[in-house]
Length: 367
Ligand code: HEC
Image (tube, rainbow, N blue to C red; front, side):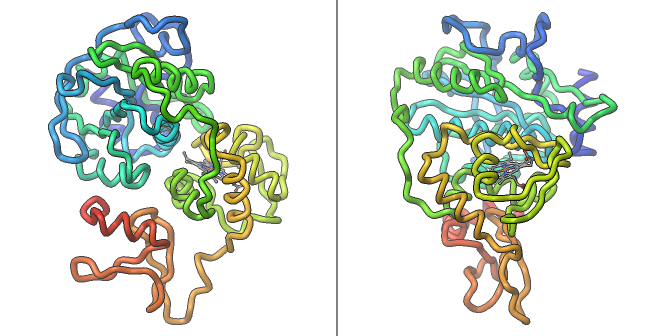
């Protein structure tokens, strides 16, 4: 109780340098869920998931009872966290994409009841996976959160390490719960074998082979891929990740202190093997898209990135920059720029994709 109190206050006051949602290395530790992480030979039940009742981002009451009958993949996040959660969420969204057509739910429990209301969670969901109907983001309360965390054997700890930048790069787990409410697997989201085991085990539990086929090119344009693969959710927020504009030919400094000149090969490698060269100064890790993007799509995306100009647009004299409420990209205003009139003011968009998402559910983006 005391620990949770400290975490919640810390989470509320400062978004930086907090390790959230448990979980960290595979150090054996009696009652922690991370000791169970990793691929297993069998899918025997590990322990029962705790009972709960929380409000979802859609304003519905979701209980553990109501989730019976279908497996779910759970994780633990909070929306203002800048270090671990964007990586966790991007991996969850990658799992959603890889499990397209599989009858499984994805449940993200917020560990920041003070801030993460259902409305805030709705905006977060829209930013990461606007079209994902199987994703539930649940707003916990200060009184119910401790029992939930204890029931899943999840802990959250403030990082007090002196070399904080590196030590906040922790992994966090996904928990696979079956239709009877039994935990059947725990996976470190940052281990490739674990991620693959999660996909495999979910298919086994749901007896589904959907989405297993070899990756096919989507034929989508670079900017649509940039949105749909959630690149936008990190890279349009300079506090999280470097802006991907005007990069070709630029010299970048890496974590290993070496300098790299950006070419197409570097851009490609950044997407499918991001750990090989890490840009200096970002505590957040970039998720690998290896095996999750078809080669043709990767080429289209790399070409689009390579040609992306430094500025949002050559700003006309009378144009100002506004923020697209859906993807947070800076966009220029002006008579020919994409916009809609909403609640008495004009709202600006980078693309028809974002405009259509906004028009469908404007309330999700009003913040
Ligand atoms: C969870 C957040 C996140 C997501 C999602 C994400 N990235 Fe990144 N990306 C980062 C961070 C942080 C860095 C800098 C640290 C590093 O190099 O690992 C980075 C670095 C890069 C770089 C190197 C940039 C430079 O300045 O040298 C490229 C290129 C890149 N990402 C492309 C992409 C593309 C394309 C996508 C989508 C397919 C994507 N990223 C998705 C967080 C993210």
